[in-house]
Amino acid sequence: MPRALVAAAVGLVTVGAWDLAGEPSAFAKGHSGARGVFEYGCRVQPPQKFLERRSFLQKGMIDTKKQAEAVRWRTERYGFPDDDTAHAAGTSSHSQAKTVHFMGLPISIHAKIAPALACVEKRLLKTATGASRYKPRAIGGFRESNTYRGVEVSNHLYGIAIDIDPDKNPCCKCVEPWPNNPICKNPGDVTKRTTLPKAWIKAFERFGFDWLGNDTLEDTMHFEFLGDPDKITK
Ligand SMILES: [Zn+2]
Image: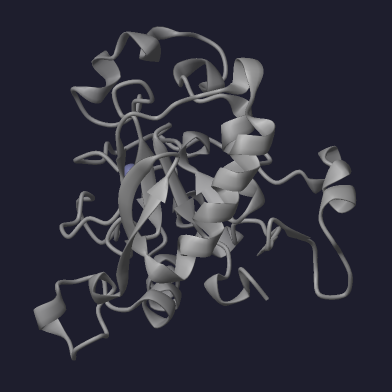
């Protein structure tokens, strides 16, 4: 998430990010059963709606009850989104940080979601070929200071968000200077204002990541893991 948040006029979200029906091949490639569908060793799972930013922030108004619930749920699973000194040893999110490599680049994320990101990479290497090939040059994960104003808590503080090439995938509805990026002038749906191929967005969504390109912010560089971290590999 870039530096600040505009008081965005939030429209209705019409993008159905989750579309299992469109990918029947998943069942052939992975294994399925009562326990769910697994691919590359990870559960195929959607981002959980109640954690999606657009579920508690609509038309520029924040539903503080829903938002507090989302914060509580994330803190229970990932630790406190503050610095290490504010809480008992090992209970902050950042104390559970892990450096992994994603598409050849090092990134610090919460250890719990590392398997999901590894599965995204495996899927990308398999499916994002040809015209869908994309080589990231700058990625960011864990952050220790909040980038939202007000009560919102960035998922970068939990280590469950990842930004990819902000210069090429800007946040067109954030505050200046983001909207000045020439790509923000492109008309049409949001996929015209990012250089990320659709195959990339799909790969992330498949393993529980929400793309903030679908949010009113149009923060196209940003993915956040909103699946259940305790069910990634089992
Ligand atoms: Zn971000």
